[in-house]
Structure formats: C-alpha cells, structure tokens
Image (cartoon, one colour):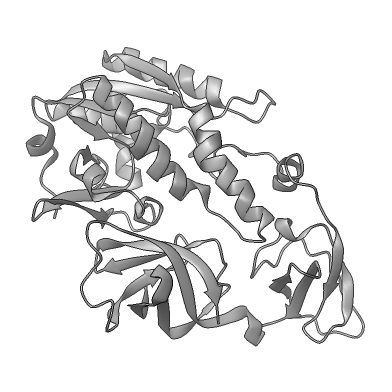
Length: 368
C-alpha cells in the first residue's frame, strides 16, 4: 500500500498537472489538505481551432479552479513537442497498418517528460496528477500500482513511464473511487463537479475519426474479402479499421450468408485487402504474441529468460489474463496466454502485472 498523502507532500512544493477537469481539481484540494504548497500547471498540446478542440474552455475551467482554491496557475504550450514526439508516431503507426495508442506515449514523453522537466524549473519537489493509480518507493525505486477504483485504474496508460519519474510523483486519487471524487468536488462547491470526463484521443476529441485521419493520410480504398477470397464489398482504407472491429463494415444482410456479425480478422497491406469473417472465427483469436520496445518500471523482472508467469492486459479495461513472458533474440519478448485472446491488435500495448503492481509493457508486433 502506498504511503499516506500527508506523509508524501506535507510542507513540499508540489506542481500539479491541472487539466480543467474534475479529477485534477480534486487532486488539488487533497494536496492542499495534506499540507502541500500547490502550484497548478496547465498544458496545451493541440492548437487547432476547428470547433472540436476544447483547449480554451479547459484553460478557463482551470483558472476558475485556481481562483476558488487560491493557488497559482502556470500555463505552458507543448504543442510542438507533442507533434514531434507523439503525433508523428501516431501517423507512422497508421501508415504501417497498425493501431497505435498515443495516450501511452503522451504520458511518457509529455506529462512525465517535458512537463516534469518544466515542473522542476518551477521549483517543484514533486509532480502530481489526477490519474487513478498509486505509487511507492521500494528498495529505492519508484513503482506503479493499480488505482483502488478498478473501473478507472489507469496503470495501463502509465506503464511506459520511468521508475525515476514515479519516485518523484504523487497520485492523490489513487485510493479513491470516482464517485468519491465527484462528491469531494460537489462538497467543495466546484462548478465542474459534474463536468463530463474526456474520452478518446485528446487531439481528435469528439470529431469523426475518419474525417480527422484522412486530412493527414490519403485514404486508399480496396477490396473487402473473406479468408476464402470471396468479395464482400469495398473498404475505405486499411488505416480506418482495427482487428476485431465489428461496426462500420457496411456488410448488410445477405441471402447467401447467416445473420452472424462480421468482424475484421486481418489486414493485408501488400494487396490492400481487408479480410473479414463471420462469427467467432479462428482468425479472431491468438494464443501468443511477440512484442517489441519493452518498457520496464525499474529493472526487468527476474525470470524472463526462463519464462515469467504473471498477468497481462492487451487492452484497457480488460480483465487480467494469465500468461508466461520470456525474452527472445533482438530484444523481443514472447507472451503465451493460458486462454486464447480475442482481437489482439498490433500497435497496441501488452501490459504486465504482478498482482496490483504494474511491471511494465511492450508494443504488440506479431500475433499467432
């Protein structure tokens, strides 16, 4: 269990990432109550003024929270760093036919990267955020643990952050449930106590995904076929689809087929073919995966050469899955699951756990 917030922050200058949402606002309240000298830092990562971006409204909400709490607000623009370190990666992955998760990179490169460096220049002794995770220092190394609210736990998205960053960070919401957080905001009289949680990728917001992506990458329509080669229609571009996708395929009822739903089961980049199949097709499932670019929180765990038994997630909100992880040549790792996994998508992340402790993760490269 992580140490108490009072023990972590009392009489220390803490720089809090304040987004303008209810979670980081309540984190500010709890830090103040714990005796910290709180400074709020609001960052802008995306500047397109196209009607979908809520950056201006979020900054105004952050200002209002700081006025209510009487804490200073600093504002910094990381748009260039975000485009260079996160958005270009996002586009490169889609060009390669994969399904990236830019939020993982945003946490590592921006929130616990350049943002953390900026917080230090402000004199911050600790960095704080409104993430639903917990951290501790074990044997001199920062660790990451799941948040108490299983439905809001965000350790999946923070698995690539360094141990050094966790040693210098605090997470005031880690032992709370979401309903408790909203109640604290309501009791304090914050106007944003019922503000809707942000969803999706920050730079896309509520806009149609295809519309957004096609402004940066040219769409290349092509054939949609079954594993046996039967033509089922035309896809709008492989980048718009992910393995396991069911919605948006445009395959209506057919007299020569059953009424089972259709799924994307493969993408053939060489021939620009989207492969689709009905029902629980074998191609939807994987027994193993190969992953690259592993990020471990601290040193890699013992036992990887022989095979480490642990738990893993291949997507956010998935229940922990039993597996064995071992190292391969060329710094790759193999993950073999006890039970077949549905719709494992290359480009996404596999994240490893020992009970509630997050060990790290890696990028899914190949499935089988």
